[in-house]
Length: 402
Image 1 (tube, rainbow, N blue to C red):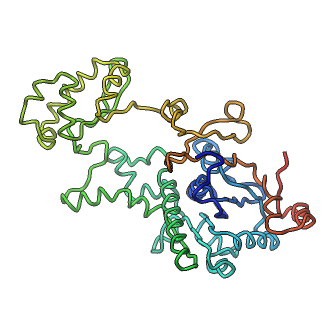
Image 2: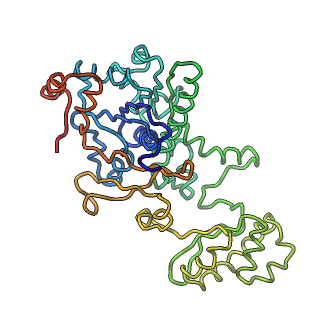
Image 3: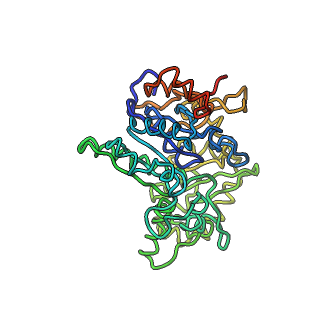
């Protein structure tokens, strides 16, 4: 979507008390879609900004299209500012440990008294139940929800290679928020929406639960699963690279045989159905591996490009920066990196993965320094210049000035 086009959620205000990934991912979705998202940070800034190693990308990925106010919530004056922000908001998001915001005086029962129309989203580890008191992380949920078991080889549970559950929990939070907004159109009242890591994980592995229910046999971990199709694997090429290729229908089997000159397979009626091919997979796969090994990666992909057969190179995350499809389709958006990292402090990161009326979401607010918008946000609450100055001078609010 272009910067001057009306955005679906423009006019909605979101107050975000979040850190790490789950809560911020919900906020960035709403912000990309046009909501005015105000991120409330502690006076020292969101600690996510300072993560290293595998956490170094969390903040830049999930905090564009937000404004920032740095606020001391332990001071009554700072808490009063927070309450004023929430009182004028449509949506609030928090993802702190169970009970943390309640102890601050920002729990749902407290703030909804000032704002009955508020949609209050709590992004937690668990929904209500025996586990609700526990602190959860993405990895915790993947382990106890069955996803790590399904991802790794037998006896070696392995988390997925990104914060898939944190992001999915944030997405379900947004789904709940949008549903609550629609209900508010009818009733005028808001509500508390809770999304969770554990239940999101269980939803993901529901297909394997259903498989057990249908077959009576437990699903094997993905590395040793019995494939639903005869050809559905990663194949080595002659230049020591690899390509994934799948043949997932009877019509695709016909195309595959014709494309690669497998006349004997094409004429074998006993291989006409998928179930029959799966039964003879041990015969088919070695021949296909040898066939693909005669191609370079580039040659194999060129042959497959317009065939209609599913295929994919084995890419790394950093390869996406130069992906021609993402570059041409608006799939990457430009953001500034904290501390001047990257090339001249700029990089390109994934846009929201949807198009509306053929338009993609863009960046309206680049990544903000902690408290960069504090004074403007205070003024929007009706505070005078003197009142803003007093809060900043007393250290209750931090205003970042370049």
